[in-house]
Image 1: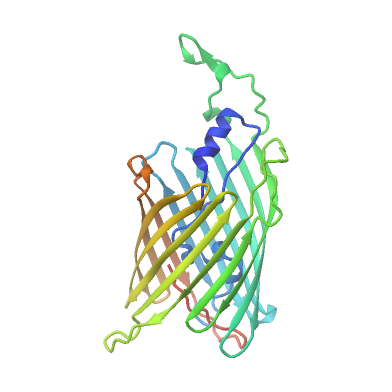
Image 2 (image 1 turned 90 degrees about the vertical axis):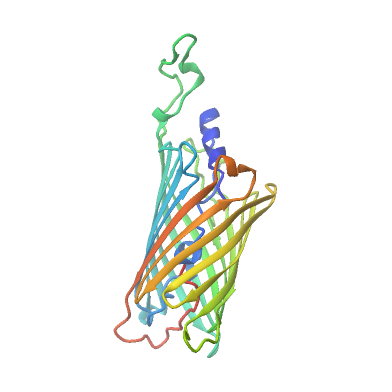
Length: 328
């Protein structure tokens, strides 16, 4: 769901307009409130707190790699009828040419429909700051016929930073073994142009995710499960489908997915492989996106690392309903 090659080219050719998509995570359940704000407060230990750290290095074989870091905290509180969350993100594109920083607060309301089915409704308020380092870009008027890029540019480069608000929402429904959610990010489609260009808006991102947790009857390991899941994402002209599963056996977790894009950019994109482990309330995962499209020679793959730490509530909240879904 990125168009950062396009972004950098547009910045070089015409810096008045900025067009880009949101960063995405392969381990989207390891970044729960980034995927869907309705997941705030769904930690597995009696509604206790949860801290998640996510790091993604996309296409490191290319010059000017794209690096995304996300840190989040969320927890359930009976006194407010649901969960709260805080999330910060740093995204660096093209060796620092374009940097995005954001901070958001989230509230999710829990509704117990009946004894078996629970819903959560989330709302996120966000502030985004974007900056561009013009010194790392080159313009035609800097070229000397014999010496190359040695001249000073006459382009107006006073506008190198922009800050704007943003809002997102989501809904989540789940039972003991089934979960499904829908999220809409960038509700107000904020203008992200450094010069205020009205047609340079951050497009809405629509996400649908769902899955099952299926116990595998095993007398030697009663905690062995398999979890098939799907994620469908739409943003502007980009449509994406992730299909795969998690397999849990004791402290070990593995997973395999396939990512396909549709619409304007039809592409068999990547195979995604995950390995991880869990020990008490700590979880760690590593995944590798193996490019299977025609871009694999230049960009063979991407790396992603996640870590999570949970702590239990001293007393189980009366209204809290546990969400059973993959941790990675």
